[in-house]
Image (cartoon, rainbow, N blue to C red; front, side, top):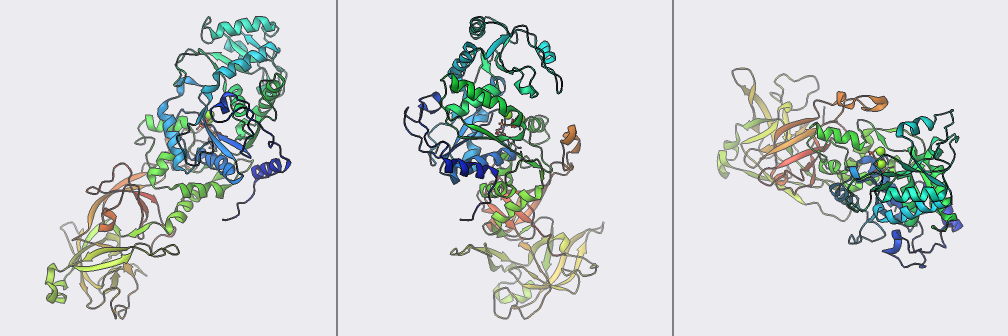
Length: 596
Ligand code: ATP
Ligand code: MG
Ligand code: MG
Protein backbone atom coordinates (compact mmCIF):
# COMPACT_ATOMS: atom_id res chain seq x y z
CA UNK A 1 0.00 0.00 0.00
CA UNK A 2 1.31 3.42 -0.93
CA UNK A 3 1.55 5.95 1.88
CA UNK A 4 -1.06 8.68 1.34
CA UNK A 5 0.27 12.22 1.54
CA UNK A 6 -1.03 14.03 4.58
CA UNK A 7 -3.36 17.03 4.40
CA UNK A 8 -5.05 19.33 6.88
CA UNK A 9 -8.11 17.08 7.18
CA UNK A 10 -5.97 14.04 7.95
CA UNK A 11 -4.12 16.04 10.59
CA UNK A 12 -7.38 17.09 12.27
CA UNK A 13 -8.69 13.52 12.27
CA UNK A 14 -5.43 12.07 13.57
CA UNK A 15 -5.41 14.62 16.37
CA UNK A 16 -9.04 13.82 17.30
CA UNK A 17 -8.28 10.12 17.32
CA UNK A 18 -5.27 10.72 19.55
CA UNK A 19 -7.29 12.86 21.97
CA UNK A 20 -10.25 10.49 21.86
CA UNK A 21 -12.60 13.38 21.09
CA UNK A 22 -15.38 11.07 19.93
CA UNK A 23 -14.38 7.87 21.73
CA UNK A 24 -17.18 8.05 24.32
CA UNK A 25 -20.04 8.49 21.87
CA UNK A 26 -23.24 6.61 22.60
CA UNK A 27 -26.14 6.27 20.21
CA UNK A 28 -29.00 8.44 21.41
CA UNK A 29 -31.80 6.65 19.63
CA UNK A 30 -32.47 9.74 17.50
CA UNK A 31 -33.97 9.27 14.01
CA UNK A 32 -30.59 9.35 12.29
CA UNK A 33 -29.31 6.27 14.07
CA UNK A 34 -32.43 4.54 15.38
CA UNK A 35 -32.69 2.36 12.30
CA UNK A 36 -29.16 1.07 12.66
CA UNK A 37 -28.20 1.21 16.34
CA UNK A 38 -29.78 0.74 19.74
CA UNK A 39 -29.78 3.72 22.11
CA UNK A 40 -26.91 3.65 24.59
CA UNK A 41 -24.72 1.42 22.42
CA UNK A 42 -21.16 2.71 21.88
CA UNK A 43 -20.38 3.75 18.32
CA UNK A 44 -17.93 1.26 16.82
CA UNK A 45 -16.83 3.69 14.09
CA UNK A 46 -13.81 5.82 14.97
CA UNK A 47 -14.95 8.71 12.79
CA UNK A 48 -18.08 9.45 10.79
CA UNK A 49 -18.08 11.61 7.69
CA UNK A 50 -20.90 12.14 5.22
CA UNK A 51 -21.51 12.96 1.59
CA UNK A 52 -24.73 14.97 1.47
CA UNK A 53 -25.90 15.66 -2.09
CA UNK A 54 -29.13 17.41 -2.87
CA UNK A 55 -31.01 15.05 -5.24
CA UNK A 56 -31.65 17.82 -7.77
CA UNK A 57 -29.35 16.75 -10.60
CA UNK A 58 -26.65 14.35 -11.67
CA UNK A 59 -23.34 14.31 -9.80
CA UNK A 60 -20.27 15.74 -11.50
CA UNK A 61 -16.51 15.46 -11.19
CA UNK A 62 -16.51 18.00 -8.32
CA UNK A 63 -18.84 15.77 -6.36
CA UNK A 64 -16.52 12.87 -7.18
CA UNK A 65 -13.75 14.76 -5.38
CA UNK A 66 -15.98 15.19 -2.35
CA UNK A 67 -17.02 11.50 -2.46
CA UNK A 68 -13.42 10.34 -2.64
CA UNK A 69 -12.43 12.63 0.25
CA UNK A 70 -15.27 11.69 2.58
CA UNK A 71 -15.49 7.97 1.85
CA UNK A 72 -11.70 7.78 1.55
CA UNK A 73 -11.10 9.33 5.00
CA UNK A 74 -13.64 7.00 6.60
CA UNK A 75 -11.99 4.00 4.95
CA UNK A 76 -8.49 5.07 5.96
CA UNK A 77 -9.31 5.80 9.63
CA UNK A 78 -11.60 2.93 10.56
CA UNK A 79 -14.69 5.05 10.18
CA UNK A 80 -17.93 5.20 8.27
CA UNK A 81 -19.16 7.63 5.65
CA UNK A 82 -22.89 8.19 5.30
CA UNK A 83 -24.50 8.80 1.96
CA UNK A 84 -27.22 11.23 2.88
CA UNK A 85 -29.75 12.88 0.65
CA UNK A 86 -30.10 16.48 1.63
CA UNK A 87 -33.68 16.53 0.45
CA UNK A 88 -35.17 19.50 2.26
CA UNK A 89 -36.07 21.44 -0.87
CA UNK A 90 -39.11 19.64 -2.33
CA UNK A 91 -39.60 21.56 -5.60
CA UNK A 92 -36.32 20.65 -7.24
CA UNK A 93 -35.87 17.06 -6.14
CA UNK A 94 -36.68 13.81 -7.83
CA UNK A 95 -36.20 10.06 -7.35
CA UNK A 96 -34.51 9.87 -10.78
CA UNK A 97 -31.68 11.88 -9.22
CA UNK A 98 -31.73 9.82 -6.01
CA UNK A 99 -31.17 6.65 -8.03
CA UNK A 100 -28.47 8.16 -10.22
CA UNK A 101 -26.57 9.34 -7.11
CA UNK A 102 -26.75 5.87 -5.53
CA UNK A 103 -25.42 4.37 -8.78
CA UNK A 104 -22.59 6.91 -8.94
CA UNK A 105 -21.40 6.24 -5.38
CA UNK A 106 -21.52 2.47 -5.93
CA UNK A 107 -19.75 2.74 -9.25
CA UNK A 108 -16.95 4.82 -7.68
CA UNK A 109 -16.43 1.85 -5.36
CA UNK A 110 -17.94 3.01 -2.08
CA UNK A 111 -20.73 1.92 0.23
CA UNK A 112 -22.45 3.82 3.01
CA UNK A 113 -22.95 3.31 6.75
CA UNK A 114 -20.12 0.79 6.82
CA UNK A 115 -22.25 -1.75 5.02
CA UNK A 116 -19.20 -3.38 3.41
CA UNK A 117 -20.85 -3.66 0.05
CA UNK A 118 -24.25 -4.57 1.49
CA UNK A 119 -26.37 -2.15 -0.43
CA UNK A 120 -29.63 -3.39 1.07
CA UNK A 121 -29.06 -0.86 3.86
CA UNK A 122 -30.78 2.31 2.67
CA UNK A 123 -28.84 5.58 2.49
CA UNK A 124 -29.78 8.29 4.98
CA UNK A 125 -32.20 11.03 4.05
CA UNK A 126 -32.68 14.40 5.69
CA UNK A 127 -36.44 14.27 5.17
CA UNK A 128 -36.61 11.43 7.74
CA UNK A 129 -35.67 14.04 10.32
CA UNK A 130 -38.44 16.57 9.62
CA UNK A 131 -40.21 15.68 12.91
CA UNK A 132 -37.03 16.20 14.89
CA UNK A 133 -36.24 19.45 13.07
CA UNK A 134 -39.69 20.72 13.88
CA UNK A 135 -39.18 19.88 17.56
CA UNK A 136 -35.79 21.59 17.49
CA UNK A 137 -37.44 24.71 16.08
CA UNK A 138 -40.02 24.71 18.87
CA UNK A 139 -37.23 24.27 21.42
CA UNK A 140 -35.45 27.33 20.02
CA UNK A 141 -38.68 29.32 20.19
CA UNK A 142 -39.35 28.26 23.79
CA UNK A 143 -35.85 29.30 24.85
CA UNK A 144 -36.27 32.70 23.18
CA UNK A 145 -33.86 31.92 20.33
CA UNK A 146 -36.29 32.10 17.41
CA UNK A 147 -39.23 34.20 16.28
CA UNK A 148 -41.82 34.33 13.54
CA UNK A 149 -41.21 37.28 11.25
CA UNK A 150 -44.02 38.70 9.12
CA UNK A 151 -42.03 41.33 7.28
CA UNK A 152 -42.24 41.08 3.50
CA UNK A 153 -39.26 39.40 1.81
CA UNK A 154 -38.27 42.85 0.49
CA UNK A 155 -38.37 44.44 3.97
CA UNK A 156 -36.33 41.55 5.30
CA UNK A 157 -33.75 41.96 2.58
CA UNK A 158 -33.40 45.72 3.17
CA UNK A 159 -33.33 45.35 6.96
CA UNK A 160 -30.64 42.69 6.81
CA UNK A 161 -28.15 45.47 6.00
CA UNK A 162 -24.93 44.92 4.11
CA UNK A 163 -21.19 44.61 4.62
CA UNK A 164 -20.12 47.39 6.98
CA UNK A 165 -23.74 48.42 7.48
CA UNK A 166 -25.57 46.85 10.43
CA UNK A 167 -29.07 45.46 9.98
CA UNK A 168 -32.27 46.72 11.54
CA UNK A 169 -34.30 44.66 14.01
CA UNK A 170 -37.61 43.38 12.74
CA UNK A 171 -40.67 44.83 14.50
CA UNK A 172 -41.68 41.19 15.18
CA UNK A 173 -38.43 40.41 16.98
CA UNK A 174 -39.78 41.18 20.44
CA UNK A 175 -42.72 38.78 20.37
CA UNK A 176 -42.93 36.46 23.38
CA UNK A 177 -42.08 32.78 23.07
CA UNK A 178 -45.75 31.93 23.61
CA UNK A 179 -46.85 34.18 20.73
CA UNK A 180 -44.12 32.76 18.49
CA UNK A 181 -45.02 29.20 19.33
CA UNK A 182 -48.67 29.78 18.50
CA UNK A 183 -47.76 31.48 15.22
CA UNK A 184 -45.30 28.73 14.26
CA UNK A 185 -47.92 26.04 14.88
CA UNK A 186 -50.34 27.95 12.66
CA UNK A 187 -47.65 27.95 9.96
CA UNK A 188 -47.34 24.17 10.32
CA UNK A 189 -51.12 23.74 10.27
CA UNK A 190 -51.49 25.52 6.95
CA UNK A 191 -53.18 28.65 8.30
CA UNK A 192 -50.93 31.03 6.38
CA UNK A 193 -50.01 31.70 2.79
CA UNK A 194 -46.70 30.60 1.25
CA UNK A 195 -44.14 33.35 1.80
CA UNK A 196 -46.28 35.30 4.26
CA UNK A 197 -43.95 34.66 7.23
CA UNK A 198 -40.82 32.76 8.20
CA UNK A 199 -39.25 31.47 11.39
CA UNK A 200 -35.94 33.18 12.09
CA UNK A 201 -33.16 32.44 14.55
CA UNK A 202 -32.72 35.35 16.98
CA UNK A 203 -29.01 36.09 17.06
CA UNK A 204 -27.59 39.52 16.22
CA UNK A 205 -28.73 41.94 13.50
CA UNK A 206 -25.46 43.88 13.89
CA UNK A 207 -23.15 40.89 13.41
CA UNK A 208 -20.30 41.55 10.96
CA UNK A 209 -21.20 38.12 9.54
CA UNK A 210 -24.42 38.61 7.60
CA UNK A 211 -25.25 34.91 8.02
CA UNK A 212 -25.65 35.58 11.75
CA UNK A 213 -28.22 38.36 11.25
CA UNK A 214 -31.24 36.30 12.28
CA UNK A 215 -31.17 33.76 9.41
CA UNK A 216 -34.47 32.24 8.30
CA UNK A 217 -34.78 28.63 9.48
CA UNK A 218 -38.30 27.59 8.38
CA UNK A 219 -40.50 28.73 5.53
CA UNK A 220 -43.99 27.94 4.29
CA UNK A 221 -44.02 26.04 1.00
CA UNK A 222 -46.96 24.01 -0.22
CA UNK A 223 -45.10 21.47 -2.32
CA UNK A 224 -45.30 17.71 -2.52
CA UNK A 225 -42.09 16.13 -1.27
CA UNK A 226 -40.78 13.02 -3.01
CA UNK A 227 -40.40 11.26 0.36
CA UNK A 228 -42.88 12.85 2.77
CA UNK A 229 -45.59 13.72 0.25
CA UNK A 230 -48.00 16.38 1.57
CA UNK A 231 -47.32 15.81 5.28
CA UNK A 232 -45.63 19.18 5.58
CA UNK A 233 -46.34 22.64 4.25
CA UNK A 234 -43.36 24.12 6.09
CA UNK A 235 -39.80 23.11 5.30
CA UNK A 236 -36.52 23.79 7.14
CA UNK A 237 -33.88 25.94 5.45
CA UNK A 238 -30.65 24.23 4.46
CA UNK A 239 -28.55 26.13 7.01
CA UNK A 240 -30.78 24.92 9.84
CA UNK A 241 -31.34 21.40 8.56
CA UNK A 242 -27.79 20.49 7.73
CA UNK A 243 -26.17 20.75 11.19
CA UNK A 244 -29.08 18.81 12.68
CA UNK A 245 -28.70 16.04 10.09
CA UNK A 246 -25.02 15.78 10.98
CA UNK A 247 -25.73 15.65 14.71
CA UNK A 248 -28.49 13.04 14.45
CA UNK A 249 -26.19 10.75 12.49
CA UNK A 250 -23.32 11.24 14.99
CA UNK A 251 -21.12 12.71 12.27
CA UNK A 252 -17.73 13.71 13.68
CA UNK A 253 -16.16 15.65 10.80
CA UNK A 254 -18.59 17.52 8.56
CA UNK A 255 -16.51 18.38 5.51
CA UNK A 256 -17.79 20.89 2.97
CA UNK A 257 -16.55 23.35 0.39
CA UNK A 258 -15.15 26.80 1.22
CA UNK A 259 -18.27 28.76 0.34
CA UNK A 260 -19.78 27.43 3.58
CA UNK A 261 -17.04 28.96 5.73
CA UNK A 262 -19.27 31.92 6.64
CA UNK A 263 -21.98 29.48 7.73
CA UNK A 264 -19.75 27.79 10.29
CA UNK A 265 -20.58 30.28 13.13
CA UNK A 266 -24.28 29.51 12.68
CA UNK A 267 -23.55 25.77 12.59
CA UNK A 268 -21.78 26.10 15.93
CA UNK A 269 -24.42 28.45 17.38
CA UNK A 270 -27.15 25.98 16.56
CA UNK A 271 -25.24 22.99 17.98
CA UNK A 272 -24.66 24.90 21.22
CA UNK A 273 -28.32 25.87 21.56
CA UNK A 274 -29.57 22.33 20.87
CA UNK A 275 -27.07 20.79 23.28
CA UNK A 276 -28.15 23.34 25.95
CA UNK A 277 -31.78 22.37 25.46
CA UNK A 278 -30.92 18.69 25.87
CA UNK A 279 -32.13 17.75 22.39
CA UNK A 280 -28.61 16.80 21.32
CA UNK A 281 -25.71 15.31 23.25
CA UNK A 282 -22.14 16.69 23.09
CA UNK A 283 -19.66 16.34 21.47
CA UNK A 284 -21.36 17.91 18.47
CA UNK A 285 -19.96 17.44 14.97
CA UNK A 286 -17.62 20.11 13.63
CA UNK A 287 -17.55 21.67 10.19
CA UNK A 288 -14.34 21.88 8.11
CA UNK A 289 -13.99 23.47 4.68
CA UNK A 290 -11.82 22.58 1.69
CA UNK A 291 -11.40 24.16 -1.75
CA UNK A 292 -13.89 22.99 -4.35
CA UNK A 293 -12.61 21.49 -7.57
CA UNK A 294 -12.24 23.88 -10.48
CA UNK A 295 -11.23 22.02 -13.61
CA UNK A 296 -10.19 23.83 -16.78
CA UNK A 297 -12.49 23.50 -19.82
CA UNK A 298 -15.22 22.18 -17.53
CA UNK A 299 -18.22 23.66 -15.76
CA UNK A 300 -19.29 22.11 -12.46
CA UNK A 301 -22.61 23.66 -11.67
CA UNK A 302 -25.68 21.44 -11.82
CA UNK A 303 -27.76 24.37 -13.04
CA UNK A 304 -25.44 25.12 -15.96
CA UNK A 305 -25.04 21.45 -16.84
CA UNK A 306 -28.83 21.21 -16.88
CA UNK A 307 -28.88 24.10 -19.36
CA UNK A 308 -26.58 22.15 -21.72
CA UNK A 309 -28.94 19.18 -21.55
CA UNK A 310 -32.16 21.19 -21.82
CA UNK A 311 -30.93 23.28 -24.74
CA UNK A 312 -29.80 20.19 -26.64
CA UNK A 313 -26.12 21.17 -26.67
CA UNK A 314 -25.31 17.61 -25.59
CA UNK A 315 -27.25 14.37 -25.99
CA UNK A 316 -28.11 14.05 -22.27
CA UNK A 317 -26.64 13.93 -18.76
CA UNK A 318 -24.55 10.95 -19.84
CA UNK A 319 -23.17 12.53 -23.02
CA UNK A 320 -19.50 11.47 -23.03
CA UNK A 321 -18.48 15.16 -23.14
CA UNK A 322 -20.28 15.92 -19.88
CA UNK A 323 -18.26 16.16 -16.63
CA UNK A 324 -21.03 14.24 -14.87
CA UNK A 325 -20.10 10.90 -13.36
CA UNK A 326 -22.44 9.16 -15.84
CA UNK A 327 -20.79 11.13 -18.65
CA UNK A 328 -17.25 10.29 -17.53
CA UNK A 329 -18.25 6.65 -17.22
CA UNK A 330 -19.65 6.57 -20.73
CA UNK A 331 -16.54 8.35 -21.98
CA UNK A 332 -14.42 5.46 -20.70
CA UNK A 333 -13.29 6.78 -17.32
CA UNK A 334 -12.76 4.17 -14.62
CA UNK A 335 -13.38 4.42 -10.86
CA UNK A 336 -9.65 3.79 -10.32
CA UNK A 337 -8.75 6.75 -12.57
CA UNK A 338 -11.12 9.08 -10.73
CA UNK A 339 -9.87 7.96 -7.32
CA UNK A 340 -6.30 8.47 -8.47
CA UNK A 341 -7.24 11.95 -9.68
CA UNK A 342 -8.80 12.86 -6.31
CA UNK A 343 -5.66 11.71 -4.53
CA UNK A 344 -3.35 13.51 -6.90
CA UNK A 345 -5.07 16.91 -6.66
CA UNK A 346 -5.18 16.59 -2.86
CA UNK A 347 -7.11 18.68 -0.37
CA UNK A 348 -6.31 22.32 0.27
CA UNK A 349 -7.90 25.38 1.81
CA UNK A 350 -7.33 27.74 -1.10
CA UNK A 351 -9.10 27.80 -4.44
CA UNK A 352 -7.14 26.97 -7.57
CA UNK A 353 -7.65 25.59 -11.06
CA UNK A 354 -6.67 22.05 -11.94
CA UNK A 355 -5.62 21.46 -15.51
CA UNK A 356 -7.89 19.07 -17.41
CA UNK A 357 -4.82 17.13 -18.52
CA UNK A 358 -4.34 15.98 -14.91
CA UNK A 359 -7.61 14.06 -15.14
CA UNK A 360 -6.67 12.66 -18.55
CA UNK A 361 -3.27 11.57 -17.25
CA UNK A 362 -4.93 9.54 -14.48
CA UNK A 363 -7.04 7.64 -17.00
CA UNK A 364 -4.03 6.88 -19.18
CA UNK A 365 -2.17 5.64 -16.15
CA UNK A 366 -4.98 3.26 -15.25
CA UNK A 367 -5.52 1.97 -18.78
CA UNK A 368 -1.90 1.71 -19.89
CA UNK A 369 -1.33 -1.79 -18.54
CA UNK A 370 -4.89 -3.07 -18.49
CA UNK A 371 -6.57 -2.03 -21.74
CA UNK A 372 -6.23 -4.53 -24.57
CA UNK A 373 -4.48 -3.28 -27.69
CA UNK A 374 -6.04 -3.41 -31.10
CA UNK A 375 -5.60 -1.83 -34.52
CA UNK A 376 -8.20 0.47 -35.97
CA UNK A 377 -7.97 2.52 -39.15
CA UNK A 378 -9.81 5.80 -38.64
CA UNK A 379 -9.30 7.36 -42.07
CA UNK A 380 -8.98 4.38 -44.37
CA UNK A 381 -7.52 4.03 -47.85
CA UNK A 382 -7.07 0.65 -49.48
CA UNK A 383 -3.59 -0.81 -49.93
CA UNK A 384 -3.22 -3.47 -52.64
CA UNK A 385 -0.32 -5.93 -52.50
CA UNK A 386 0.03 -6.49 -56.25
CA UNK A 387 2.36 -9.53 -56.07
CA UNK A 388 0.38 -11.34 -53.32
CA UNK A 389 -0.95 -14.05 -55.66
CA UNK A 390 2.53 -14.90 -57.02
CA UNK A 391 4.27 -14.94 -53.62
CA UNK A 392 1.58 -17.20 -52.14
CA UNK A 393 0.79 -19.18 -55.31
CA UNK A 394 1.32 -22.49 -53.50
CA UNK A 395 -1.16 -21.48 -50.71
CA UNK A 396 -3.99 -20.40 -52.99
CA UNK A 397 -2.80 -17.20 -54.69
CA UNK A 398 -4.81 -13.96 -54.51
CA UNK A 399 -7.46 -15.44 -52.19
CA UNK A 400 -4.93 -16.62 -49.59
CA UNK A 401 -5.28 -15.19 -46.06
CA UNK A 402 -2.23 -15.50 -43.80
CA UNK A 403 -2.97 -15.82 -40.06
CA UNK A 404 -1.29 -13.23 -37.78
CA UNK A 405 -1.34 -12.62 -34.07
CA UNK A 406 -0.11 -10.06 -31.54
CA UNK A 407 -0.38 -9.87 -27.76
CA UNK A 408 -3.42 -7.97 -26.44
CA UNK A 409 -1.29 -6.71 -23.53
CA UNK A 410 2.30 -5.86 -24.48
CA UNK A 411 3.12 -5.11 -20.80
CA UNK A 412 0.89 -7.43 -18.78
CA UNK A 413 0.80 -6.97 -15.01
CA UNK A 414 3.04 -9.39 -13.10
CA UNK A 415 1.76 -12.94 -13.10
CA UNK A 416 -0.68 -12.29 -15.93
CA UNK A 417 -0.19 -13.82 -19.35
CA UNK A 418 -1.31 -11.64 -22.22
CA UNK A 419 -4.13 -13.00 -24.33
CA UNK A 420 -3.41 -13.11 -28.08
CA UNK A 421 -5.31 -11.25 -30.79
CA UNK A 422 -5.83 -13.07 -34.05
CA UNK A 423 -6.35 -11.48 -37.45
CA UNK A 424 -5.43 -12.15 -41.06
CA UNK A 425 -3.53 -10.43 -43.84
CA UNK A 426 -4.42 -10.81 -47.52
CA UNK A 427 -3.99 -9.12 -50.86
CA UNK A 428 -5.92 -6.05 -49.69
CA UNK A 429 -5.63 -4.22 -46.38
CA UNK A 430 -6.82 -0.87 -45.02
CA UNK A 431 -4.22 1.68 -43.94
CA UNK A 432 -4.44 5.26 -42.69
CA UNK A 433 -4.57 7.78 -45.52
CA UNK A 434 -1.83 9.80 -43.80
CA UNK A 435 0.56 6.83 -44.03
CA UNK A 436 1.12 7.37 -47.76
CA UNK A 437 2.73 10.37 -49.44
CA UNK A 438 3.36 10.47 -53.15
CA UNK A 439 6.06 13.06 -52.56
CA UNK A 440 7.31 12.53 -49.01
CA UNK A 441 8.09 15.54 -46.82
CA UNK A 442 11.59 15.60 -45.32
CA UNK A 443 12.07 12.87 -42.71
CA UNK A 444 8.90 10.98 -43.67
CA UNK A 445 9.43 7.26 -42.96
CA UNK A 446 6.15 5.71 -43.95
CA UNK A 447 4.86 4.72 -47.41
CA UNK A 448 6.14 6.52 -50.50
CA UNK A 449 7.23 5.01 -53.79
CA UNK A 450 10.41 2.96 -53.30
CA UNK A 451 10.20 2.85 -49.45
CA UNK A 452 9.76 -0.25 -47.33
CA UNK A 453 7.74 -0.44 -44.09
CA UNK A 454 6.37 -3.25 -41.96
CA UNK A 455 2.63 -3.85 -41.62
CA UNK A 456 2.60 -4.26 -37.84
CA UNK A 457 2.34 -7.96 -36.92
CA UNK A 458 2.43 -8.80 -40.66
CA UNK A 459 4.92 -8.54 -43.48
CA UNK A 460 7.39 -6.02 -44.85
CA UNK A 461 6.05 -4.31 -47.96
CA UNK A 462 7.58 -2.00 -50.55
CA UNK A 463 5.53 0.86 -51.93
CA UNK A 464 5.26 1.12 -55.70
CA UNK A 465 2.79 3.97 -56.26
CA UNK A 466 -0.94 4.68 -56.18
CA UNK A 467 -4.08 5.03 -58.32
CA UNK A 468 -6.26 8.16 -58.38
CA UNK A 469 -9.73 9.12 -59.49
CA UNK A 470 -10.60 11.88 -62.00
CA UNK A 471 -10.29 14.53 -59.25
CA UNK A 472 -6.81 13.40 -58.26
CA UNK A 473 -7.97 11.78 -55.03
CA UNK A 474 -5.97 8.68 -54.16
CA UNK A 475 -8.17 5.57 -54.43
CA UNK A 476 -5.58 2.85 -53.79
CA UNK A 477 -2.03 2.67 -52.56
CA UNK A 478 0.05 0.02 -54.36
CA UNK A 479 2.84 -2.09 -52.91
CA UNK A 480 4.52 -5.46 -53.14
CA UNK A 481 4.95 -7.90 -50.28
CA UNK A 482 8.57 -8.91 -49.49
CA UNK A 483 8.68 -12.73 -49.19
CA UNK A 484 9.69 -14.41 -45.90
CA UNK A 485 9.31 -11.28 -43.74
CA UNK A 486 6.25 -12.15 -41.68
CA UNK A 487 6.54 -11.02 -38.05
CA UNK A 488 7.62 -13.79 -35.72
CA UNK A 489 9.01 -16.09 -38.45
CA UNK A 490 12.75 -16.89 -38.72
CA UNK A 491 14.64 -14.24 -40.65
CA UNK A 492 11.73 -11.77 -40.55
CA UNK A 493 14.03 -9.01 -39.30
CA UNK A 494 16.71 -9.40 -41.99
CA UNK A 495 15.01 -6.79 -44.12
CA UNK A 496 15.43 -3.51 -42.22
CA UNK A 497 12.67 -0.90 -42.19
CA UNK A 498 12.36 2.48 -40.43
CA UNK A 499 8.64 2.29 -39.64
CA UNK A 500 5.86 -0.15 -38.81
CA UNK A 501 2.37 1.05 -39.69
CA UNK A 502 -1.02 -0.04 -38.36
CA UNK A 503 -3.53 -1.69 -40.68
CA UNK A 504 -6.61 -3.89 -40.77
CA UNK A 505 -7.34 -6.65 -43.31
CA UNK A 506 -10.07 -6.02 -45.86
CA UNK A 507 -11.18 -9.65 -45.40
CA UNK A 508 -11.73 -9.59 -41.62
CA UNK A 509 -11.87 -5.86 -40.76
CA UNK A 510 -15.17 -4.70 -39.26
CA UNK A 511 -16.81 -1.32 -39.86
CA UNK A 512 -17.35 0.61 -36.63
CA UNK A 513 -18.74 3.98 -35.68
CA UNK A 514 -16.09 5.90 -33.79
CA UNK A 515 -17.01 9.06 -31.89
CA UNK A 516 -14.03 11.36 -31.68
CA UNK A 517 -14.61 13.66 -28.72
CA UNK A 518 -12.79 16.84 -27.89
CA UNK A 519 -13.26 19.43 -25.16
CA UNK A 520 -16.79 20.74 -24.87
CA UNK A 521 -15.54 24.31 -24.45
CA UNK A 522 -12.78 26.18 -26.20
CA UNK A 523 -12.32 28.55 -23.24
CA UNK A 524 -10.29 27.19 -20.31
CA UNK A 525 -12.60 28.93 -17.82
CA UNK A 526 -15.93 28.93 -19.65
CA UNK A 527 -18.05 30.38 -16.84
CA UNK A 528 -15.50 32.40 -14.84
CA UNK A 529 -16.41 35.99 -14.01
CA UNK A 530 -20.01 35.62 -15.17
CA UNK A 531 -19.07 34.75 -18.78
CA UNK A 532 -21.77 33.12 -20.90
CA UNK A 533 -20.48 29.57 -21.18
CA UNK A 534 -22.76 28.83 -24.14
CA UNK A 535 -20.65 31.23 -26.21
CA UNK A 536 -17.49 29.19 -25.89
CA UNK A 537 -18.93 25.83 -26.88
CA UNK A 538 -16.40 24.05 -29.09
CA UNK A 539 -18.15 23.41 -32.44
CA UNK A 540 -15.81 20.46 -33.07
CA UNK A 541 -16.30 18.64 -29.79
CA UNK A 542 -17.74 15.61 -31.61
CA UNK A 543 -16.74 14.14 -34.95
CA UNK A 544 -18.17 10.82 -35.98
CA UNK A 545 -16.09 8.67 -38.32
CA UNK A 546 -16.55 5.22 -39.79
CA UNK A 547 -13.46 3.28 -38.92
CA UNK A 548 -12.36 -0.25 -39.71
CA UNK A 549 -11.30 -2.28 -36.70
CA UNK A 550 -9.63 -5.64 -36.26
CA UNK A 551 -11.94 -8.56 -35.32
CA UNK A 552 -10.90 -8.67 -31.65
CA UNK A 553 -12.25 -5.13 -31.19
CA UNK A 554 -15.56 -5.88 -32.84
CA UNK A 555 -16.10 -8.59 -30.22
CA UNK A 556 -15.90 -6.02 -27.41
CA UNK A 557 -18.31 -6.03 -24.52
CA UNK A 558 -20.10 -2.71 -23.89
CA UNK A 559 -17.92 -0.57 -21.56
CA UNK A 560 -14.74 -2.51 -22.43
CA UNK A 561 -11.71 -0.26 -22.86
CA UNK A 562 -9.01 -0.59 -25.52
CA UNK A 563 -5.94 1.12 -26.75
CA UNK A 564 -6.34 1.63 -30.47
CA UNK A 565 -2.66 1.53 -31.32
CA UNK A 566 -1.24 4.99 -32.04
CA UNK A 567 -4.70 6.66 -31.71
CA UNK A 568 -5.51 6.56 -28.02
CA UNK A 569 -7.82 4.87 -25.56
CA UNK A 570 -11.34 4.01 -26.64
CA UNK A 571 -14.33 2.44 -24.96
CA UNK A 572 -17.15 0.39 -26.47
CA UNK A 573 -20.14 2.66 -25.87
CA UNK A 574 -22.22 1.42 -22.91
CA UNK A 575 -25.47 2.36 -24.60
CA UNK A 576 -25.07 1.99 -28.36
CA UNK A 577 -22.37 -0.65 -28.91
CA UNK A 578 -23.63 -3.93 -30.37
CA UNK A 579 -21.53 -6.80 -31.73
CA UNK A 580 -23.12 -6.40 -35.16
CA UNK A 581 -22.86 -2.59 -34.96
CA UNK A 582 -19.76 -1.63 -32.99
CA UNK A 583 -19.60 1.90 -31.53
CA UNK A 584 -16.51 3.27 -29.80
CA UNK A 585 -15.88 6.52 -27.94
CA UNK A 586 -12.51 8.23 -27.74
CA UNK A 587 -11.75 8.30 -24.01
CA UNK A 588 -8.35 9.98 -24.11
CA UNK A 589 -5.55 10.34 -26.64
CA UNK A 590 -2.07 8.95 -26.18
CA UNK A 591 0.41 11.15 -24.40
CA UNK A 592 2.79 11.49 -27.30
CA UNK A 593 1.39 11.99 -30.72
CA UNK A 594 2.32 9.07 -32.89
CA UNK A 595 5.60 8.79 -34.92
CA UNK A 596 6.06 12.13 -36.68
P1 ATP B 1 -23.95 22.54 -7.67
O1 ATP B 1 -23.37 23.86 -7.28
O2 ATP B 1 -23.35 21.94 -8.89
O3 ATP B 1 -25.44 22.52 -7.67
P2 ATP B 1 -23.91 21.66 -5.02
O4 ATP B 1 -22.74 22.03 -4.22
O5 ATP B 1 -25.12 22.46 -4.82
O6 ATP B 1 -23.49 21.57 -6.53
P3 ATP B 1 -24.71 19.34 -3.58
O7 ATP B 1 -25.53 18.23 -4.09
O8 ATP B 1 -25.28 20.21 -2.55
O9 ATP B 1 -24.28 20.15 -4.86
O10 ATP B 1 -23.26 18.85 -3.17
C1 ATP B 1 -22.96 17.72 -2.42
C2 ATP B 1 -21.55 17.84 -1.92
O11 ATP B 1 -20.63 17.94 -3.00
C3 ATP B 1 -21.37 19.10 -1.08
O12 ATP B 1 -20.72 18.75 0.12
C4 ATP B 1 -20.53 20.00 -1.93
O13 ATP B 1 -19.72 20.81 -1.15
C5 ATP B 1 -19.74 19.01 -2.79
N1 ATP B 1 -19.35 19.62 -4.06
C6 ATP B 1 -20.15 20.17 -4.98
N2 ATP B 1 -19.42 20.70 -6.00
C7 ATP B 1 -18.13 20.47 -5.70
C8 ATP B 1 -16.87 20.77 -6.34
N3 ATP B 1 -16.81 21.41 -7.52
N4 ATP B 1 -15.73 20.36 -5.73
C9 ATP B 1 -15.78 19.69 -4.57
N5 ATP B 1 -16.91 19.39 -3.92
C10 ATP B 1 -18.08 19.76 -4.46
MG1 MG C 1 -26.17 22.37 -2.79
MG1 MG D 1 -24.42 24.78 -5.49
